[in-house]
Amino acid sequence: SVYHVFESVAKKYDIMNDSMSLGIHRLWKDTLLHQMNPYPGTQLLDVAGGTETNAGDIAFRFINYIRSQWDHQIRQKLKSHQNLSWQEISKSYQQEENELPGGSQVVVCDINKEMLKIGKQKAQHLGYSEGLSWVVGNAEELPFIDNKFDVYTIAFGIRNVTHIDQALQEAYRVLKPGGRFLCLEFSQVNNPLISRLYDLYSFQVIPVLGEIIAGDWKSYQYLVESIRCFPAQEEFKAMIEDTGFLKVEYQNLTSGIVAIHSGFKL
Ligand SMILES: C[S@@+](CC[C@H](N)C(=O)[O-])C[C@H]1O[C@@H](n2cnc3c(N)ncnc32)[C@H](O)[C@@H]1O
Image (cartoon, rainbow, N blue to C red; front, side, top):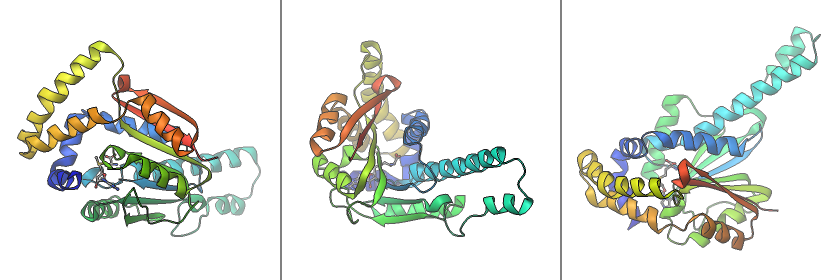
């Protein structure tokens, strides 16, 4: 099963992900955060957010983003009120303890508790703790109440879910009205030349790398195949719309090797 594939590659996944995407997945994730553009107070659910050193990739970026938004807001405020006393200035910097700015929270959810454990350790190591929690759960049956989150993200995760339509329904359910669904996933390359190169790379190089780095040809061949089986941009967009999301759009990154799909619960 998919679950076992991930178990077997978990330990080497970080190296693989970096070598497979040549590190570009970091830029793709940065782009996802810029699209999200969260503000202090945003409540985020990141599904399938586990996985070795990629665990928390979205959550940590989110926290950094919220903090820099907060700093920016303070600087703007100080600029527009030139003659504040230092008490007033220091007050504007004050923030609730044990909280992210504005009470933002991010919940990382993954079906695999081992992956979450690694994420927790990594968070501790990097000094992320406020407003961050880790929950074991299945994307197809999320352990959260309705209308809870402002944003739902799933990065390189929905492809591995057995019933994609069910995962989409669950995303819809846990989002607040006005909430946003954002999905970063491998998609279909639209440029014929790049498509040829990409095929060569995927089928000739990745399984070889998988064998060399992780001693596991089959899992990586599976990963490559699962990427090809995943619905293309327009088809996935239609599935998101069928769930009830509105204003559904997508942005291709790197010639469509990946795409960010976005939709709103309105
Ligand atoms: C390729 S990793 C994605 C890691 C991370 N989001 C990233 O962007 O690098 C896929 C993750 O999906 C998780 N996963 C697979 N099926 C799932 C499901 N039904 N519900 C929740 N998580 C799932 C796996 O445990 C694994 O940690």
